[in-house]
Image 1 (cartoon, helix red, strand yellow):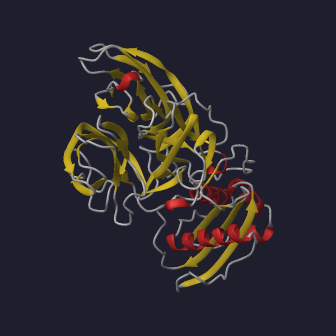
Image 2 (cartoon, rainbow, N blue to C red):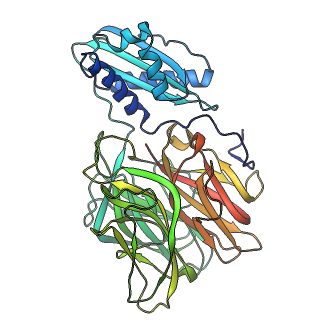
Image 3 (cartoon, one colour):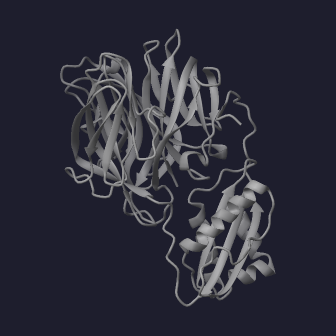
Length: 484
């Protein structure tokens, strides 16, 4: 099966995987145990690995069966039990377990730890495995996918500079600089490329990257500026590879920091993309935009909002002082607003603001749902290879690709558009009904000049994305991370 499909009318799967599904199942089991006088069970990393692998195996084979029970369970246990189910949801599977005497006995047994696995097959069916073990010495606890990270604002903003030669890389130490936390796995930053004499691209390189496979920023002699999410290596460095000589500026305005498990603040909640409005902005006169209590953002408990900000005529825009070149993650002021501003020498312009979601503050309950998992950037669509230019809509398959989980709640993705003979607008959104053409992620006004933008995008039915173009155009989509 090829990576993308030109069809836009494919039947959606029955139900998308629930976000944070392993924790949802864990909570359902413990709630049932507590109601019946049993103690709560911790999630075991070992048992969860085994259960998840078995749920994936069942989803692949289409056969509901028990695993070889002792395989993957370390010595020292006195009892092991397993429940397996096929359903349309995690809650439905758990309900069926609770109504079956044999499964109920496993749920309420004398176990000391548990593991769970949840997978979705191509038909949207959910395959669940539960493991229960009794032992005197517990195994290490499950903390969630490696590098599950929460958003952390950076104030003041930190600027890093560098230059790259043709087909060369520059590495910048990011963590530990200014207020950027040691251990951060990714940063929210605005990358500006200038001084190039030809068309070129910048790519984030990690140890397992392939040069030329993805693009973080496409630029020409006029330069380019893109606000995006940049994964870091384990030493906290950012490595950017340039296809042509170029000068770089990287302004960091936020970071994602590992949590080691459930946490309250910094978790992302996507919303159905909505345009907050088009605003007239004049130099020296910041325009306030209300974001609290609108478009699915609650009235309280909000640390920051994720926005798409675009100005006409390529005028530079800032949001609360931070560069806004497409993606913006903006901490919300006490009055529930953000401020749009433009340079002092700029002519008045119109700025559109699109809402993609919001991040929780410390008043939220602790969970893993909405944590960010950075990946080595990977391409999931390139219409230049093996398929026609995108004209209208196209489905982009996401789950399980480039280390993305089977049930991503949202993704961080970079969309690059290469217009044809006419100017073209491009949009990236959930496949199951985003308002095509109403909330553009990238707007290109010059034919044949590539333009890139990054967005945080809720996934749709089947956890897939959709790409829309107003005119036929070549389109690339690269993933840089996903949200539980």
